[in-house]
Length: 110
Length: 310
Image 1 (spheres, chains in turn purple, red):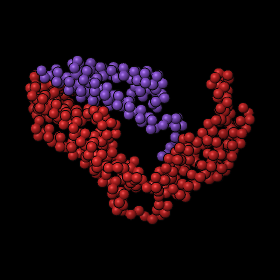
Image 2 (image 1 turned 30 degrees about the vertical axis):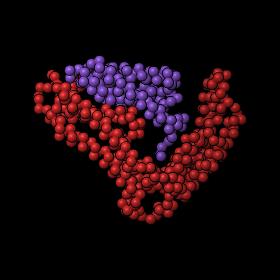
Image 3 (image 1 turned 60 degrees about the vertical axis):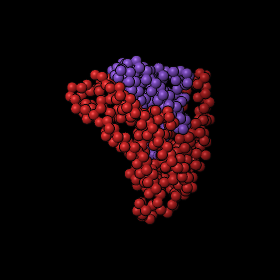
Image 4 (image 1 turned 180 degrees about the vertical axis):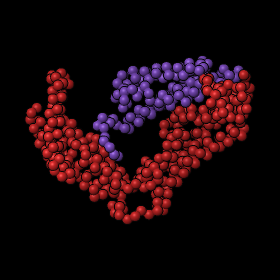
């Protein structure tokens, strides 16, 4: 309501930005759950599990960047780097949940 | 250390399933309770739209010609000043009554209460259930190490001093589910679902905002004085300078396709700044109340000159 409006902001439609953010969230949610299942099944522990997650989500980001935005992620997000950061830490919780679940079921109980 | 497979079958997996199901039920109950969103009445919609319109003018004013911009600016400024778009044009003078007697306000409060209850009740029940039946259970081993600091939190009810911290109790499994299942709910119920605990926290702190039907409330719950907001917006509008988006467009085009060096644009910008500062010096002597009109005329004049130069 107050303050100056940055004219660059006007180039983006808020509704579409939000929609793109939701789509990213959706992709990341399902992806991190599946990634967690994979990590648990493989029996990754400690740092290797977290490295697996970050490498995996970097791979996903790169896929989205190359295939879906065709290298022009600035057209879909306010900052072109958002495609690499959006929802990464939100997905971490569900990754840990599914990682723990499968790790527990397979490697702890037997 | 080995755990009994029965714990897995009867504690670990059931807790997860129950939490997913409770989340889904919560979503459905919230949808039921909220019902269809109420229609905003005409006056309050007009109030917010006027503000939006002003914002759009400030952001996109470069795309309309100078005279159109100034016509809109003058009109909106006057309307804000006189309070044409206010819901109650004369409410500014009379003292506000007790907000608790305002039915719209009470209704917003009730909505917030309902949402709060929907958040707190199921979580308390599940936590009670887990504490009652499964306290002291070692459920699962986290696949990553934690510092000893977490021992008290993650192994509450398990009185073993030498056990590694990564073995956690049933309550920790509950918390892991609470945070980790958010994305599962996103997948199951679509985004904007009502099972999201974190979103509820936000809803609590900004209770009533974004509800077009209710009165405009600050986070503290006090109704806002819309006239003051209008006056603030008017000031913002007055400060907005019009700079036509098509100015120097032909030079910019030539520069873009490499027909002219980029330094041409820089020179033009410098010349414009010099002109503007000269204008400010002359306008500074005039009284501040009448700055808007003469400076806009000067801007129009300078723009014509600029166009001829190009």
